[in-house]
Length: 359
Image (cartoon, rainbow, N blue to C red):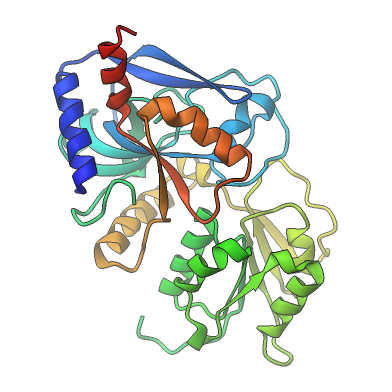
């Protein structure tokens, strides 16, 4: 545990007793405008875990959800507009902290465990609060060396385009592809994110970074340039899913055997060649038909963190606990964050400040 996390955990323990029943919670309104309220600490139901939050990721979607009901699980991207009348809610979904309580039928975790988790979107108990709720199957242990903020088989070439490679989604896709020995990885990123991506790929296996800021023609040429003569591009992971990203991909993707997956649901992807297979990859599926898959992947992430082959996206700490949430959301909305995640530290710092000032 880092020194900062340890101090925050100790401070939180001083401020609130183990038997506390109320907490501070941030509700995000359109704008964004953050309202901090007093709420009941969540109580875990069967199969659930309540975590005392030490760090929480700030997502760009939180700047848009109350206005256009955006997808809360896609980082640093603008979303299609749907459900415009969605109520203001606690939109936090990513959790890291200390287990506070567990519900019936939970045997893998116990109070005091260091964990990270994914809260079920749009449900009560979000992570913009001192305590947050998750399902046990989307909770995993954090190795001691991992802070809260943070194959030996021959290579058969399987070219894979990862568009938006410097985003958190793109960076994690690179690492899983590396673990699966998939190469070459053709990574589309901006100039600011190219350095970050270059530390994740294997140029000796053909991996490249293509700068999308050079224009669409340069991107298409860069993708083609990473392929061998007469080699097909059959797979693409589009972590952007807008602004011409899939148009560029489809100029190179094989029109008979190609497959592309997007990350923005509820959107009509026009102009995709008829022979190209399309799918949408959404993290929310682990709370639905991919529950078992989610259970395995969350524990595989813990293994990767422990062994060192999986690394968290670089973090930019937003100070002030929940009090810093609005500023973090505004920076994401205004496009001032690149190749990093925004993290709120110390949910209870706000409580201490509020109590000291009589607020």
